[in-house]
Image (cartoon, rainbow over all chains, first blue to last red; front, side, top):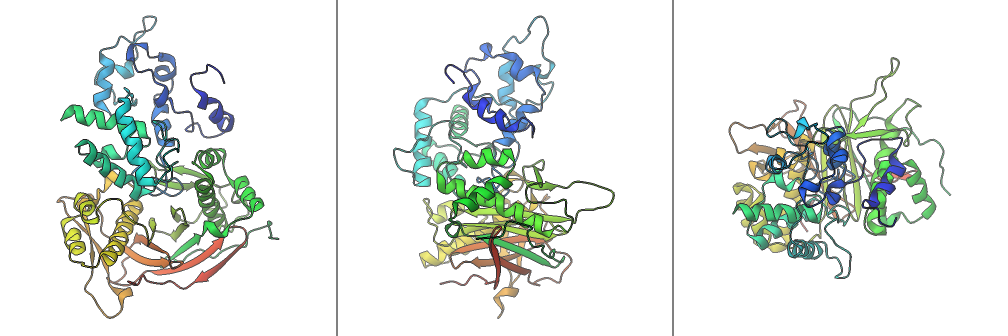
Amino acid sequence: MGGTPVPHVEQFTKHSKSFDRTYKPFPLYNIPHTLPALRPPLYLCSNPFSLSDLISSSLSHSSMASVAGSSTLMASIACRKPNQASNFNAVSLSIKGRSFPSLKSGSAPSRFRVSCAAKPETVDKVCSIVRKQLALPEDSAVTGESKFASLGADSLDTVEIVMGLEEEFGISVEEESAQTIATVQDAADLIEKLISKN
Amino acid sequence: MFCTSALSPLQLPSRMETHLWYVLPNEVKSQSLLSQYVDLLSPLEKDHVFSMRGEELQKSALLARALVRTTIARYQIHSRVSPRSLVFRKNAHGKPEVIWEQSDDWHPPPLHFNLSHTSSLIACGVTVGSPIGIDVEEKQRTMKSNILSFAKRYFSCEEVEVLSAISDPEVQRHEFIKLWTLKEAYVKALGTGFSGAPFNTFTIRFGVANPNPEDSAIVIVPLEKPTNLTTNWQFAQVQLAGSHYAAICRQNDGLPGGASMKVIVRKTIPLVEEHCVPSIVPVDD
């Protein structure tokens, strides 16, 4: 594995070759934090629907947060992030003279979700709230990449976590936004976005 | 030893019935049985199961998939449908559904299903001709937040009033959980996701108390005008295994108001056994 930036890719493509193209690795965690350094071919040239599929594949489909049934909180495919799309406007994305029409400002709904990483302190606070809600031992590995559903959060847990985050950070998380949270990192990023709006 | 050959077929629910299946993970211990369940899964599902943190969560996720696959396959009379051959997808809002193989000589029944699980119980509801949503929660589940604070944040004013009026904290907690499962079941039945029907945009109202608790109608009262929320839904509340509350929501097919849903509850171990259990309306302990 050494050195490969996307270790999860191997694991998933091994299983998903002959199957559902929606189940692909999650580049959300691997998008470089400095936008201009974005590696275009992977995200820009490929099928514009692929990232929304990626996001939907990371959503649980049980009750709000757990997978096996049908989730309400996590269920909808949330790719509408016009605020983040505008980040692309500032970046020159023309490669070999071609620009990518899907990224011109306002021309198409953004199907990307760019994670400008939240501060580590925010991620840590989210981890701590999640651990407390799910009664996880202190030494259990909870990181930005941890998915709420994989940690055992059901719908009620997820909503309690969101409420805990609202109280901790003094923000208000609307249902549309709450529905997009699948991982600790998602929550931390949303928190910082909401804080910066306050 | 258990029989791993053909699963015995099941009669589809009539349009008036709802079938509710549940499995208790604690009762499934055989490693070879769990391996058989893994064999039923699609690659996607296997990845998902093994992405869960820890054996208990993996087992629960595995049982959920095994339950839904084996149950649906049993309802099919057509021999081409086996638990392994079923293909699932999510609708535009993420609600899982079966993709049926279309052919000239076979038309799939309008079968709907919905899953819910807690760590200690996994349930699957099945209907014909109506979308369905179910939600289960442990009766003994404690909230980390204060119940009324939580309700004020997420529920409707009328619901907060109902909960506030309950003085016994245990009863209040039970009623809160029941209300949560009913709201969840409704939103899952709608299939539009949490943001499609935010919890504070509708009230779940209990009908006039009458001698038979099974007949008190539960109705949806949308709070916004105009509203996208439909109200032609009926509910049932069932207590499972003495330990869980389950709420079921399905469409009200023009039945007279207050007619109770006919729910057939079966406890099962997929591929092994099942038996009918009486449908018990939750009673306040």
